[in-house]
Image (cartoon, rainbow over all chains, first blue to last red; front, top):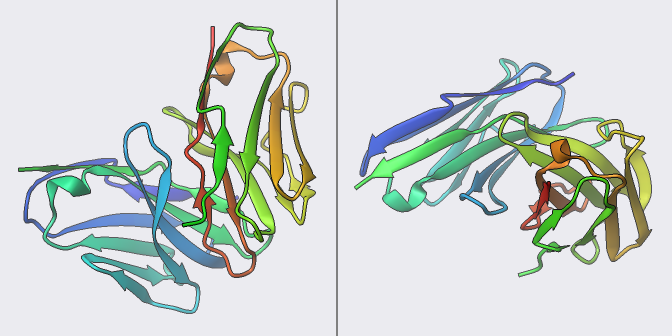
Length: 112
Length: 113
């Protein structure tokens, strides 16, 4: 069974810092990996999708990398802002069935 | 922007009552998921459909939960009878497999008292 782990569980940084969120998964046979953002009391917003054949994807200040062989992905946020405060969820998509397996998320607080 | 629509947004019900949650997936998407989110367990997959056919419902308590997709524009999740431990946020998501990348609805927050 695929296990997805996100470290750290919570993170507090001052505005302007660059930061890295980590995601690891136990089964490297994945179709792709998706990063989501969730604001309190809200649904999930897709941030980045990385196909299994890709190494990274970028969108604005966000960069996500994927190392399938080691079972790791990182989400890099450059020049963090208070508006980035949210929970960030990593999900791997299985080769079979294409279901999403989620980590428990990293709760990020960016202080002014 | 196309979106997944879930109703109701909030539901408070008494233990033992039937609860029905509805989801309208994005038109043209062939895969629909139901997830449950709690503080303790995070996001758990309950069931999903491909082209309206159930693919996997192993995450659901079979004695009280049922999921159906009567047509391509509607997916339902029913709980009968409901219990306090069912209190959670229930999310529906849809996508076009294999060009995956899934879109989530805003969720139904269920409270069973």
